[in-house]
Length: 104
Image: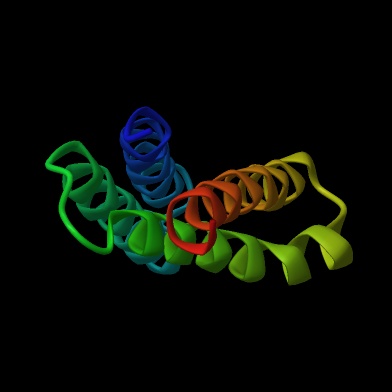
């Protein structure tokens, strides 16, 4: 269950660095590294079977979704649409895992 979190930690961090290197976008750098760090913490907590791993990963997924949604709707460019879609899919995944572990 920690694999998606670690994968997204790497992808978000890499994307933030690339956004900064290509366009000089400091918000991309800060956002990518911030969301990547949240995914990394969530993945670590999940791997160690510690509390709040699913919640942190779900929070990072929701943050990714809601941060990208306005740009995806307004700009209609592929990258914001992809980020929002990834956020939605991982939000659904971690919400399902949360309900399996805590609500059943």
